[in-house]
Amino acid sequence: MSTYTQILYQIVFSTKNREFTLVKKGREKLFRYIWGILKNKNCHLYQINGVENHIHILTSLHSSIALANLVKDIKVASSKFIKENQVFPNFGYWQNGYGAFTYSYNAKDNLITYIRNQEEHHKNISFLNEYKILLKEFEIEFEEKHLL
Image (cartoon, rainbow, N blue to C red; front, side, top):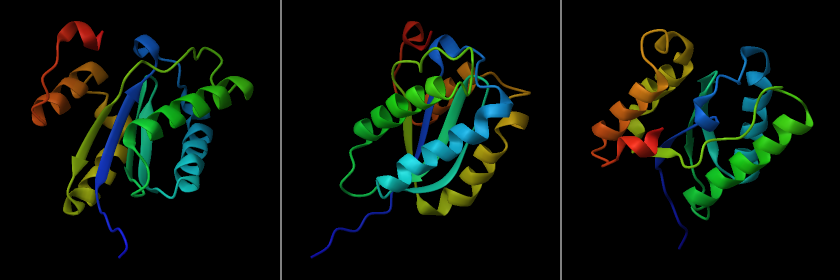
């Protein structure tokens, strides 16, 4: 028997200290690179986008891939890519940790739109406030000091 899954993950992580280093000019290169990582791991990318200090990835994971390993691989490889190719000259590191939220397949189109419109969205809300809203919406307990 084969293994079949359909789980959508919205993965969110930020630059170290939420520094505004992901300038618009280089984001497309970064997003294409991350797409390649996902493709090589047989994951399906639905949408990727972000702003100066964080990114959102909407993907489904291949059944053989562990979420924590995937995020680690994305962060390590993309950090190396950014630095070797000088994509973002002021980029230091990704923040420790990440957020990952699961959704039903029916939510896919709304999530794609939400992620696609990150620049517009963040004219009205900071990443920190957006992240707190996600954590509360998914009833994830957190301490403010660990978000700084």
